[in-house]
Length: 352
Ligand SMILES: [Zn+2]
Image 1 (cartoon, protein in one colour):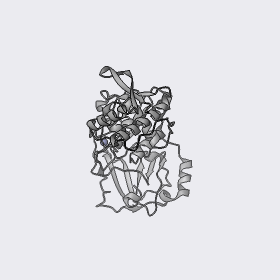
Image 2 (cartoon, helix red, strand yellow):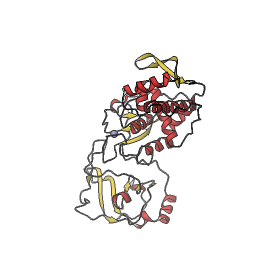
Image 3 (cartoon, helix red, strand yellow):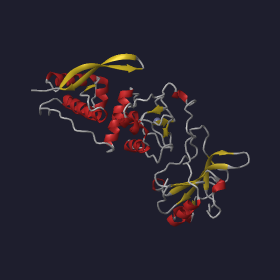
Image 4 (cartoon, helix red, strand yellow):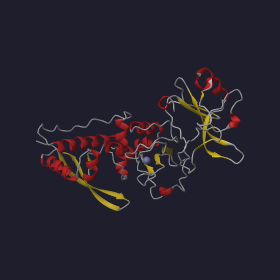
């Protein structure tokens, strides 16, 4: 809506009874996902505005202006209903009317806001029911945020919104529809939303499930954005990608760690791995400053450091180990879905 659509704004009336009589809504083009047998409908009235209109919520509904998305016919609502033009109000039947003055006038809206009760934001996408929503149970992302910092990141709506925006998402709030930001999930209509779940964690819901997965952690969303590849991550990986997103977004500043500088003739894969490894240690120091070693599997390192293939990772690691920049540390036990595993860990070495 707004400038991106050539100045079209939508009025979404959820509660007609709460709409005060002095708010004029001229006849215009309108779309809906449901027309009841008695002729009532809920949907969007579309108007043309000559200047940018701010998005605002009211007790009766909302004005969808700059930065919002609006589902139009013939798209299908995530709930399954097809959007259609309201009979007699299609673009072939009526003209898109100019927005009434109160829509664009700041003064008038203040008065309207004062007169109205605050309301919960209406939801353009139906929130999924976690008990019945598709493969939620198979993909019930377990809490992986042991520390207070990780927990507060995972449950903070502003952090989640900032991360999604960093991934190019146009999102106006938790529970609000947006186009899916996952790579290769081309969609022209809102098909994703953030939801705060019962444990407080905010997760990304992908309605069209283009990768067969419905729920993602924000760490997975960010990893997919950086690596251009959608992947389901283990809990530790989700946490570290989440931290990386928060620091890339400028929400957190990790402590600097003391690492020896690589010589100028170090091979490129070694440089990339070393930079990625130091970054990983810095991020881990945010929630566990006492640990100086970390698991660094080749599969993880490949994605984390942006390295093309496992043999290249192997080459870079061999160089770093042989030259003393990294060294092996005590293996770490990890309890995962697949059972107990021993993880090889590494720490910074002392090159001579
Ligand atoms: Zn998607």
